[in-house]
Amino acid sequence: MGVVKNPTGSVSRLTTPIKAWTQRFAFLFLVVGAFALMLIGKADTVLVERIRGAVGDAAAPILEFIARPIDTIGNTVEGIGELTELRARNATLERENERLRHWQVLGRRLEAENAALRSLTDMVPDPRLRFITARVVGDQGGAFARSILVNAGSRDGVAKGQAAITSQGLAGRVAEVGVRASRVLLVTDINSRIPVLIGVARDRAVLAGDNTGRPRLLYLAADIEIHPGDHVVTSGHGGVFPPGLPIGVVTQASETALRVQPFVDWAHMEFLRLADYKLPSLPLSPGDGGGTPGDRR
Amino acid sequence: MNQVVWTRLDGAARSLAPVTFTVLLIVIGMVPLGIPNFAPIMPALGVIAVFFWVVYRPDLMPAWAVFLVGLVQDLLGGGALGVGVFVLLVVYAAMVGQRRYLAQANFFLVWLAFVPVSAGAFALTWLFNSLIVDVLLAPGPATFQYLSTVAFYPCIAWLFLQVHRALIR
Image 1 (cartoon, chains in turn brown, cyan):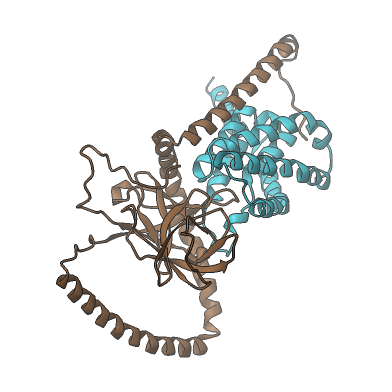
Image 2 (cartoon, rainbow over the protein chains, first blue to last red):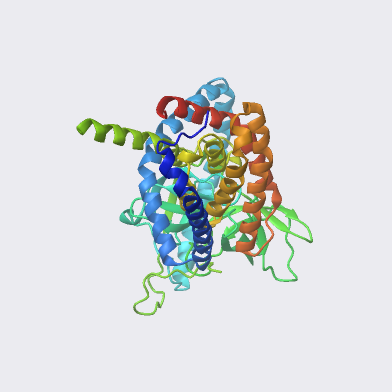
């Protein structure tokens, strides 16, 4: 297999050296093209984002078409597995329900108290959150990036910088927006930088991904104490994310690196909620085209 | 006359099958499978495809097609743009010279040859990604994806073989 037969023998014998030379030149041209792409990508222009958005738009319908039945199959298999432990699960859930009801009472009381105190101190209310729910249609595989494709875009109100959350916590933020699809950069991606608060003391830090499962905490103040198990939440600094979204817990408190185990269950991320969080009173300069203060390098 | 046109169109479509199928596979490869911890070690389909087609049918996977496959892969993935394109071109250049020995060899030998070639591809990808973000990336994730790529090579190669048998003359 694999021997290429040339239909025009005599002509090609003459043109072979020229052809080989042209091919070599063309190859070089393509390699230069690859480096040019790297430079353009590094400059992180709006153009690249727009092209990526368009490619995502084109792929989304195909992916959505395939993703649905795969979700169904996965759910069915899981359902069969769960049938066998139905009784035990039921008992656990009843116990949990009882405990949660207690928390609900407590939550309501605190909410009321919070509202009362806020009105007492004339605090500016937080902007109302609007959520856009999108299906996860693309899961970029590979070791060098952590991002996913969702089937909602600018026509659904998705904008760059919005927080993407699951019921467990923050998953990432919207990095590129197409018309009907968008890319969400996960908190574990090497390019992800999120301002956070740690523990009860609410110490400030930046959560930085490094393509491993557990992102690191950077830029901590020198004299603060952090323990494994401390909760990490978004700080809302920069006005892009709503404050207080849970992200994960500190798992490793050593001298060299502090890492955070995210709450999100990456394997069962079927839907994401994108938080449309606008600060209406933020004094943006006129003509500012929705530029997001973010983590641009 | 009419039949000549149709025959030519048919031939063109058939010779485009490797590129079309590779691009389609890369798109389909993005579907979330819901298997825990699988996404980071998803086999690098582009590397497998370029290696396979350049070894068996380099006429159907020319350099411009390699560029296209790399571009689709880079644009769909969230990674650094251009790195995948460059690495696939390197794989192409490395295999075009060596394919004569491999095209006649049995499957196991070709798989064996894929081990160092894909190792080089991953090392290059790792290096360029590190250069672009200005940090030395942890080698762990890349190593695991490399191992899974080598392990999945036979499955993907089998798929391509079916395409070759069914569509290409």
